Length: 306
Image (spheres, rainbow, N blue to C red):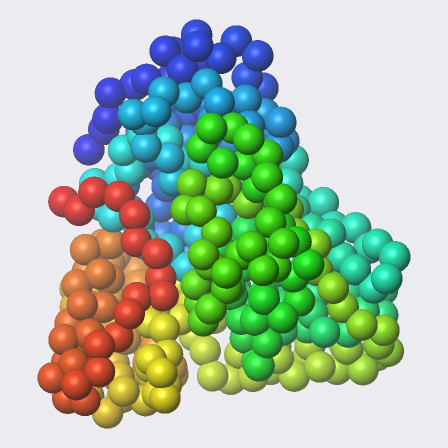
């Protein structure tokens, strides 16, 4: 489906806008699952000030959603109404600061932060190697892997709210819990400052290699997938509940529960977003029936179902 083109109206209201505004822009290729419909408007701001200017001048009734690397995301087949914001080149700087700190833009892949820390002899950030996404997503979801979470390393985050105000959040202001951030939903994170500790680059490199090997051995990372599908419920591992409910390898359309790690869903090539979401809901129903435990989606789902 396609949406009414509102880009000319938006451009007229924002003469100083520097970023790109694209109407009815396909989103499937921006997600790891490679599914979904278009964005009514895709906006790629030049930098933080451009993003703030855009949000300040955007009419209140136009919905806004932000996407990152698309690793933990299902875009539904009908596409996304309103504006989808994707941060790019103006948000991908990584700098090493005094006191074993790393500052990274929200568009920087988590693995790149881990690598910069390793090269600078900064320990404590290797876990980011195991998160398949960018810094913005890690901030919004309290992303974690291999025993550590974003909350364990974050000093502060910067972001822009829906009114176009630039705001800074301390770690405490983020109100983190497991795979949850309590900062206001309308804030689009632009930057993070992480705290590490002194370390030996060779030791850190070996730690990162172990994480890489563990991921390759246990996760279908070469498939069209989306990271962990469901949060681990208190006292349980989601994959074990899914396995016990007989869902390993389960298929809906061209979507499948991974045989390798059954908390991962896979697009075998021709799956629709509807196939993948229906498969996830089928898994949830079977787990609930088998164990009484309700699984919560970890993957974000946006847009209109067809």
